[in-house]
Amino acid sequence: MNTKIIETNKLIAKLDDGKNVGYLNISQKFMKAGQIPDAIMYDYLQLTASGYQIWADAITPTLRTMLGAAKK
Image 1 (cartoon, rainbow, N blue to C red):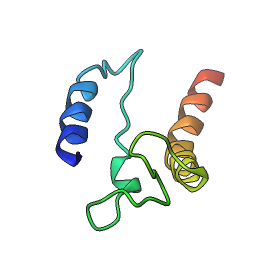
Image 2: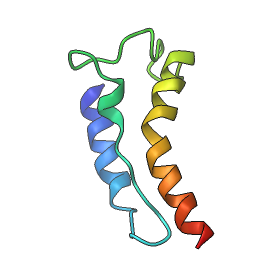
Image 3: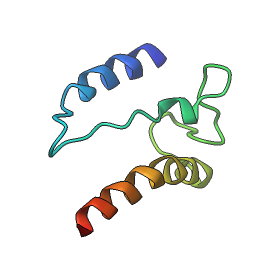
Image 4: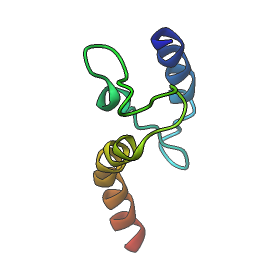
């Protein structure tokens, strides 16, 4: 499963054009010892509440930067 995720992320990363589309790889935030724990994503598809918290914490700095740039 991890190989598929890595390969999919590589394909998605190519969509980042530096202007309208950005790519932020946060996959390592979900990993523990090379695996995604059940407490984060029990079915490898949907995040749990703790998984969503990890996601929110990981994207917050980027969102703040983007929103700050949008104000100018």
